[in-house]
Length: 315
Image (cartoon, rainbow, N blue to C red):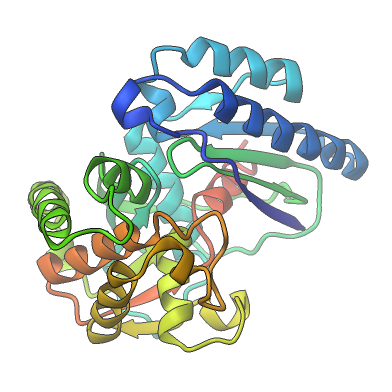
């Protein structure tokens, strides 16, 4: 299996303009062109390209779709918020140890949106080498991802009780509230109030407070986990399924909010494309833990991309 992630920031300024910026579309095209070559090299028999969050509402989404078709040879699927949440849940829950108690609250903190899903364990199965490929883009976070080499085994049924996608994410909250570098106390308070209102609304629909385990997905979560673990470099094998306490999340969040983007770049696990938005992502995670009453969370390196790959196995 080949798994790649490129930060292209497709949702640059989308919260302000309602449009995908030409330069952001071009960055995505370059990443997809590179993926296209690798897909051909690996001989993938099927390709699924999914786009999320901002592309659902962008006024020039047709330009994006035309670019993807011309570059990748397939139409992009602009998935609904509900499907995005369910795909994230599928990717996250597979492979969890039997000792991790259900039900699970899975939160996928993206660039433009955050998905909340509550559910139980799916039928277990494991990806193996074989012929399918998938590419995914979170338009607001700008994370273009690809995975190749998934076999045709049945994916198994999920026990999803409730799912919801809401418009809070690390890029959206940074652009909306945290314009100073580092952000001011007033900006942080405004962002936290905004996030809290949306999280409370989400938890009134998705019964996350009844979950036994919180599982956090995507780059904001895994970066916070890496910092909390004190890793000297980004190590997926150390971060995946690490349990991080609320106290550690709160400490990391406070530290990130106090730093400038340049200062965050000195943190060993920090991806250069994430330094300017990670503080907002950490704040979203902290508020979710507070409002859901969770004293710890499990970080997962398996997420929506894995869920999309599993979906290709379903006849």
